[in-house]
Length: 110
Image: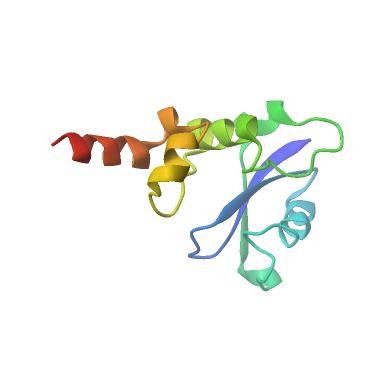
């Protein structure tokens, strides 16, 4: 199974889905938080081969709420939150890989 990153054109949010083809990935993307309200033609889908190895039988999408998946999304795909939230960032499983959080901590030190 192949990993695909899907997002609305010019949008911030993205999802990583697993599908055999680009068209199937786009169809799956319409069921994600990132693309649920998008027109079919406004969904961009690109291959993400380095994430293929994280596919498990029946898995359709990398889950931002799963700490293991979140670490992968941040560390290997460059995902991040849109804004810094002190409480959430401190509890985040991926904070040590998050460039946004690292920059924030560095600014606090200065």
